[in-house]
Length: 579
Ligand SMILES: Cc1cc2nc3c(=O)[nH]c(=O)nc-3n(C[C@H](O)[C@H](O)[C@H](O)COP(=O)(O)OP(=O)(O)OC[C@H]3O[C@@H](n4cnc5c(N)ncnc54)[C@H](O)[C@@H]3O)c2cc1C
Image 1: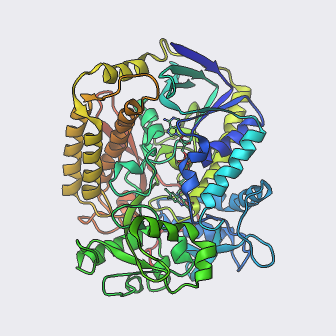
Image 2 (image 1 turned 180 degrees about the vertical axis):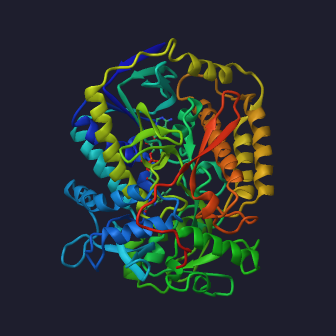
Image 3 (image 1 turned 30 degrees about the vertical axis):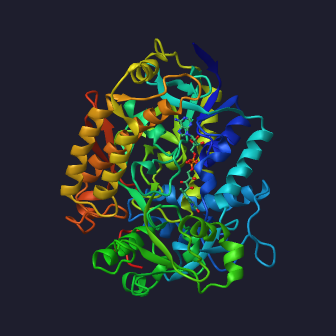
């Protein structure tokens, strides 16, 4: 049975970006949020370190310095007008959260406290600056709860544990709605609306070692990509330097912001060699690569020599207790290490997707080099690419991106919903989704989804991680071809309709394969090194040929076509990235 619902606007995803958009929408039009998780379980709630804005509360700071750092941090692949706008709107966005009751840590005189974070500097790189507002090391949790309260206050209608599996578009290209699978019943629902905002988060689960939650499987990007919308800069995936060894569980950069340092097996503070000015507070791509280099040159620790250490044991225990309580607990629980007295084994972990669904600064999805607007379709948060993070995101700029561009997407989608009309549904709107699910449900034997997923994650970790090359990426593309063939025969044990998580995990695996493919094909073509994308066969940045965004599109036959569009420049002229 298929149920049809009609709203003015839909938000797909109940994380920070989705709920921020829903707040604006629900003030203006009838809005529903469709989320595969309960909203307060979204990954935004796992964010630890902070959300930045040049409030200048503890020392001099300016939005312009923030914009400079964002553009430089992104290795100049950032669209500069978007970054400047984000940094300017950041200040009001933080005060808005404060007015909604977010319990930020305070300075002794009662203002929002701020701390240091990688790549955030005063006066264009002179010294680290305190720009990250925070609530201990639970900033994301506080943001998510605060936004949820505002949604409840506005009576936003939530459809929880509903998985959006398809985007509906009318023949004239307008957005008509989405198709969702209800986990509790196995029923399909067609949702019609005049505007749809995708805010489905990241896809770090394509890698074996990742800080990302299980649900981060790239559903939004994959769903729109299957409907012919390109994905931008997918090769730009961030590896965070300080994941717990082997597990990938994140130890926030706040640890280094508060004075933590990274050490090699000899106890050497090696970042002094790689970034003499800001050392351990260099951006993530640089620190991850430095760790890789240390390991490669035999200075790694652990049984396989593939870790280094994060040391906070020299910090005042009161600071650890007050500002870093959660991450010290993670080290104790998961590694049985006591961070107040000994260094914690760490390794780079897959963390954040800079690429995603291409949008303008109002969240409108735009396609092609000439940025044609897809009527009624919006994206915000980690699944979108505005692009403010370019080739490498600075820490604390993502939570900021959610509230700034979540709000803007909500506002422009509301405008659309007020002025527009419902687009006609395609014939048999749930048909393709039903056929996809039935194919999996009726297969009595075939390949195991968990095996395919494990092989995908292992291979991506070995071949498309911190360091890549033509050889490794070509091999990865071949492996993906094989995994796809096996995925076409995927079978599951549970054929029921009540809480069939087996079925949804098999569907999510298909989304992971799509995201991995877009990443690998885009990375293979980009014969330079920029930000998080490091090609050992092309170690230098090549502005003459590659100062442009990648657009990967899926052709009818399933192959991937690449196109490019110019980076929107501004006041900051690309220079060598030294710290
Ligand atoms: C451990 C960790 C720590 C971090 N710390 C920081 C930090 O300190 N500062 C910072 O700026 N950034 C940080 N980040 C990054 C930042 O938290 C994320 O980029 C951001 O929270 C993503 O928010 P989002 O709203 O885009 O997605 P999410 O919060 O991931 O929400 C995605 C939503 O989409 C829904 N969804 C997904 N697929 C479907 C589907 N098919 N159908 C229906 N719903 C769907 C989910 O249910 C969920 O509600 C951190 C990330 C991690 C993993």
